[in-house]
Amino acid sequence: MKPINELTTPALAYLGDAIIELYVRRRLVEAGYSTSAALNQKSLDYVRAGAQARAMQKISPMLTETEAGVFRRGRNMGHGNVPKGATVAEYRNATGMEVLAGYLHVSGEQERLYELLGAAFEFENADT
View 1 (cartoon, rainbow, N blue to C red):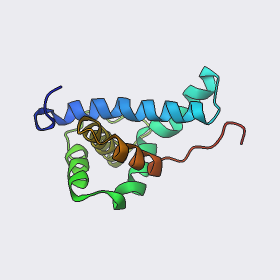
View 2: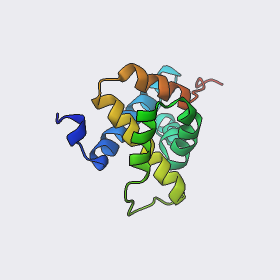
View 3: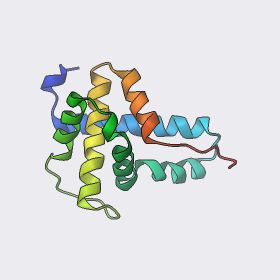
View 4: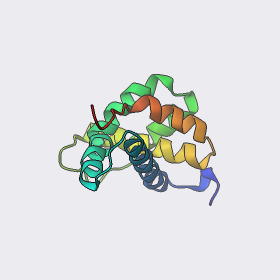
């Protein structure tokens, strides 16, 4: 993989989106969700732009100066298409979170990545 300073912001967002999706899927399986319908429906509660924007609000105070700069880099990236059901602000903040996740992953900071994702999202057991 290219050095972190050679990766584009869209590339980091693309990678970060997949990382967040994988984290959510793993946590849902661990929480006891077992049917594809339940897993797919519940995952939307976490990966939609609005949910990611709310999650980002939770962890913003925890960010280092460097992490906050990476988030802003993603948030300020040009956005052509905003998905239905999300405001421009939600989409921009969600993209910032994805860029941050991609950055931490590529930087080898998995422990910090999972610390932030753990603080960002709360998971309930399937039977509750």
